[in-house]
Image 1 (tube, rainbow, N blue to C red):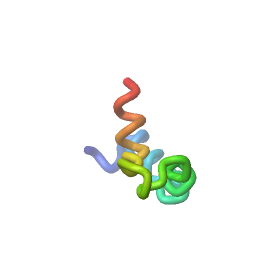
Image 2: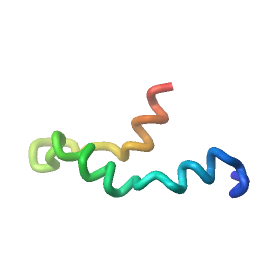
Image 3: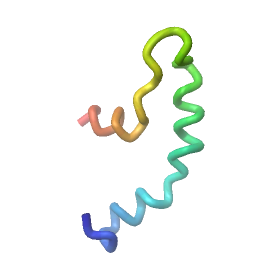
Length: 46
């Protein structure tokens, strides 16, 4: 991907790690499958 693309630059500003922590809270890994990465889930929503 072109690093100068406006969407690529916008995605780089999103605090993915902080969002992932909140997103994974309802899916504890000790009760089954751990949560999939948020970016993967958002991509599957297309």
